Length: 161
Image 1 (tube, rainbow, N blue to C red):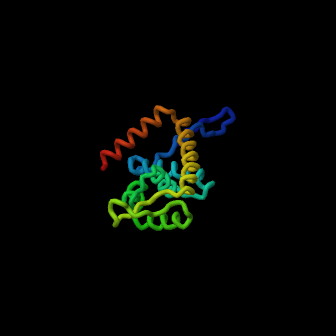
Image 2: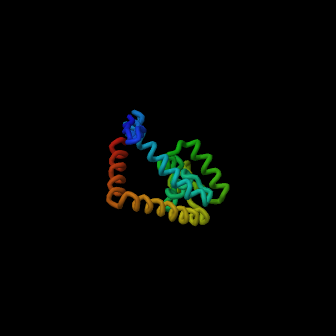
Image 3: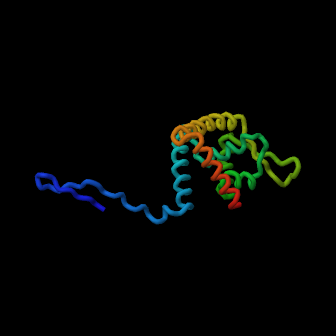
């Protein structure tokens, strides 16, 4: 809605314009979460691009950085990718000497993924980039708000599981 005012010279000027109503979809939590995810990933992707690593590969490296070795099924769940997509990504990472496969000593049918020394070095550099992004978020929204948002999201994830 526009609000008009007349001036002493007889001219009409626009004094205020009320903002347009957001699309109804933005009333839905699922939409807001997806949009927030997209923005956070877009910012992280721009940081990771310096190392030539997409966000999904960063997730794989961060999970494997614990040194425990993870099966492809467990890794797919942890990094939020379907199994075929993860397999293609891991194959490229093996070719790039970032990760390697080892037969699970407790179950010879399973294969465990591990970081190579090169992968560990890359994971360390990427972790630093991701930590800087989180620090920027904390600076923008405050430590308390950011911690509360994390707590709420973790609670939402737990209750949805």
